[in-house]
Length: 164
Image (cartoon, rainbow, N blue to C red; front, side, top):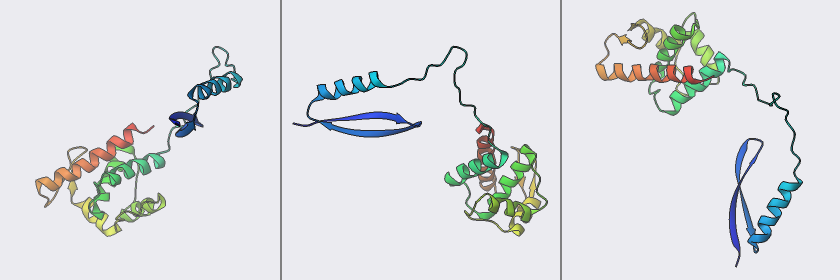
């Protein structure tokens, strides 16, 4: 009767599952340990440990990843919801857009296509807003819609700040 074993192996920092089928589990173990003995290991001297240096993400990369998290969570319900992203991005991360069109152009350059807004819808919603993060308010907006928009702002801000 065949014995089935699943062995997790790591190769190039990607974990993959390898399925091994053998009739002799003892032979499988002997081969495993023999291969380990034959493996060549690079000696690392004390104090010279090889540590991968993390290159910090650019502001564009952070923006793209943070916005994709907001989109994936289903928080962008209307195309004009992007005005909230623009508002937080400008206020908290010192990024300036001349107008709604420059922000739409930026979204396009970042490869964002989900419910892409028009420059007019961005400009209109930006003119209806008041307050500072996270205490935003909008003219002619009910309480539930205001809470929904604030949640978009908070989620985007949180994603931007946790990305390195």
